[in-house]
Length: 304
Image (cartoon, rainbow, N blue to C red):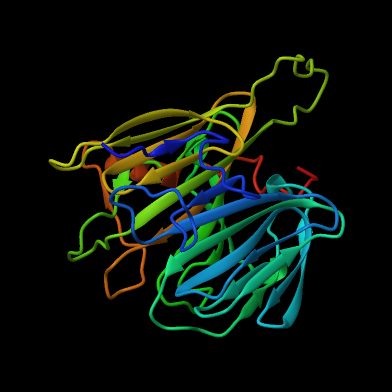
């Protein structure tokens, strides 16, 4: 069975902390074909380059500010202090376009990719333009930045968003799948790239000890005869690939907030996120109508 879990460092290549599924990646994952991800930590003044290829890309600042050049055209991405500070500017570049990303002060940047047939225009999506959704309720509350979804961005193949989950909450829940082309469902691979932090605790509570370990958990399990069984402990820099199957919950352990970047794409003709819930757990959605959204959301509103 292919390896679907990549702890920090296990998918590194050259100057990249993560290099999975992209046109230039040397690490091949059996059965993986439609999505890719690169993550780099740049020193002040450093840059990374991606040559022109048959894949579309989105540049996503994780921490810090960046400049990006797409075929000679320069863009400024204001960035953010961390992924928990609210939305960021992102930059979309279609197929056949070389991309260079640099940072005068240093920072961490992700680049989502997907093989594509049609090249769409380069577009800067600012933080102010990013649709912010508060999804779920109660301890299933989470915050979604929908900068790369069909309603927000014109693109060929991929759907990209990021999700923030307060400490103790469950996200990607109820468990669901998108591994078939059928009425009400689209076939999409999915990448989860994680970051975690010790949550900010108001009041006189003691702060974290010196050995605090910001962790979360991710579950993926079989929806048909294809075997997959993932119960992964995740931290900043870790990646989980979801080729098929039920996935969820993504759990933020008490004391630790969790972020993940989702990159989805597939072979179907419709660019849409259409899912089926695990019938054992889908009823949970009905309970949200009687609950409030977690008051700790949205992240970024109070300097989170």
